[in-house]
Amino acid sequence: MSFVGLFLSGAVLFLNGLMLLGKAEAKSVGYFNLFVGIIQIINPFYLIMTSSQGNWDLYNNAAIFLFGLTYLYVGVTLVKGLEGNSLGWFSLWVAIIAVVYTITSLVHFHDVVNALTWGMWAFLWMLFFLSNALQKKIDVYVGIVAIVTSWVTLTIPALLYFLGVWNTPAVNQIYIWVLILAIVFFVVMLFRPKFYFNREKSGQGVQAL
Image 1 (cartoon, rainbow, N blue to C red):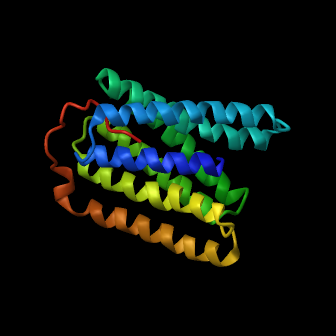
Image 2 (image 1 turned 90 degrees about the vertical axis):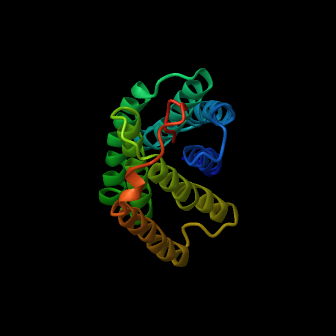
């Protein structure tokens, strides 16, 4: 994914996480999802048209559609006040695709940072499936995971890239540990029961990436 796309995705995921924690109004967040979603649909089309259209070009650019379509889906659902059931099943499909990207990053590209990043995204999409399709009341947990993920997998990598230090050996080694610590944090929270007994859903109709 382009790093501008990562930057914008970090913003929308941060707001979505705040919405799940009851800190941001759902409809306004929905409009921001639509705004970023449109950009994340136009962007990969442009990148594909200007690329050599080899299989790995298509592979990399197709990943942006996963985010763009999710944000559009979330935006329409929030703005229109629709049920999130179908969005949940879509999230399951995306989570499975994200697992493929995780394995490919590790096995083919030998990129541990990218593999951990895709693994975290797969986990988050799976949480959206559990919340929306299976109606699990895990609002607080999903919101915290979304906020942490928005920073460590999207916003900070984009900023480091803009500063010209992303993918340097030192940053790469440090970031492996940053991602591992984030994953450990998510696992530790799973053993805190209060995250499973949240307040009733507030009528937002959707848990959002």
